[in-house]
Length: 302
Image 1 (cartoon, helix red, strand yellow):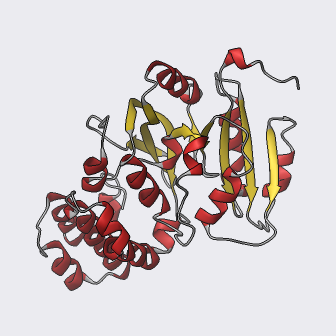
Image 2 (cartoon, helix red, strand yellow):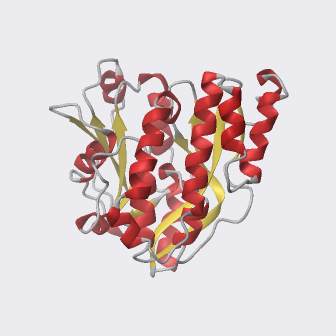
C-alpha cells in the first residue's frame, strides 16, 4: 500500500489494546477500515491473548494495521502507554476491541481540530449498545460541555475513551497512570482538562458495548477501590483543590449501590441511597427494590 500524502490529512494512530478479544474484534477493526478518513494506522497491542485475536487481526491484509505482542501481561493502562509509544501519528484515538465506530468518526473530529486549533482534545457522544437485547440509547441526552470542562468532568464524567482524539505530543508530558486497571481514563482526562480546551461533537460517533464481561462489571470491587484511592490521593487533592469533588463522591456511592445490587443486599442498597447527599441518580435505584429486573432492563442499563 502506498503512503498516503500528508495533504489528505495528518496521520491518526488508532490504539487498540487487546486481551482475549476475539468475540467482537472483527467488527471493531472493520469500523476503522470503513472510515471516510483514510490516513490512519492501527497500533494493535496484544496483551498476551490466548484466543484467536491475533489470527483474526492478521486476516485483514492492510499494511496500516501494525501488530505488537507484549512480552509480558500488564495492566490495561500500562499497556495503553506501551501501545502509544509505537504510534507514528500526529493524533491518537482509541478503540477497544468490543466497541466500534461510525464511519465518519475520524473525519468529523479531524475537521474540528483543523477549524479550532486551540483545542487539545475532541470528543463526542456515543451510543450505549446493550448486547443482550441489541437495543441502544444515547450516552448523554443533554449538551456535552466545551472549553475548560474540569468541573463538568468531576460533576458527571461523560467521556468514553473511544470517543476521543488528541495530539500524540500530549503523551510526552502526561501519561496514563499504569497502576490503574479501571479508572485510568477518568484520571487521565480530568488531569488533561486542567491544561487546555476540549471540544465536543454532539452527535454519537461510536458504539460502546455493554456485555457480561465488561471489566467495570466483573471487577466492581476493584472499581470502588481505585475510586477511593483517587479521591484521597494527596496529589489529586492538591491538583483539584479549587474544584468541587461532590460528583466524584456521588459516583463512588452509585458504584457501591451497584455492588449491593449484584449481591442482592437490599438493606445496604437503602443505606447508600439515603446517605447524604441524596440525589436523583441514587433514588432511581429504589425501583430495583420494587420492580422485577426483567421490567427494569427495558428502561435502564444496570
